[in-house]
Length: 267
Picture (cartoon, rainbow, N blue to C red):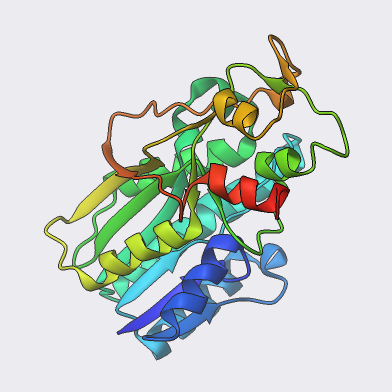
């Protein structure tokens, strides 16, 4: 099986590459000065790489993530998350690639957030495109996530704030409700999708952990800095709002955010 992975320098892409390259023939799709590439140059380079490698599966994990909302950021998000993703999918279809796996965000479907963040607007725009595109001989699986966690994750996430709370007294919202998936669980799920025969042409699926991480877990970790109110950027509440197919992971000792934080705090 031949696989191309975009975004192999990111947390999800890197984990997928490290796991799958042990068993399959995997190519990282990477371009120097990617964000500065002109559209026609990007098309030429992309066509060449996909034509020469002839992948069975393309996993699109690359994304430009930002919480900024300037007009310049909006242009960049649209260019990378929408235009270039669309070009990639169109070339994949033209190349008769068997499967295309894409990662979206569950937050795309929360109107209050989407109005604010160009990142979500660009992701939502591409989601609308994949719903109407003619796939011809290609099959598509779009996986929508809240958040992921795991070892060697250098991203600044809420759990890193929880782990560092002793140094800085951070107040957490009493109604805290988080949905995080262990990268190991996600990687295992994707591996199954690579090996399984798909009985669908196109599927959009919202993937989440069955158990939420809440203020109760904070108390069990002896974190008692809880508040009825909190600044907007410290109110974290994840809701599964979208009415598409759902996949839930069972939280156990090996993949729960609670156990991961506990190990980091009390090792």
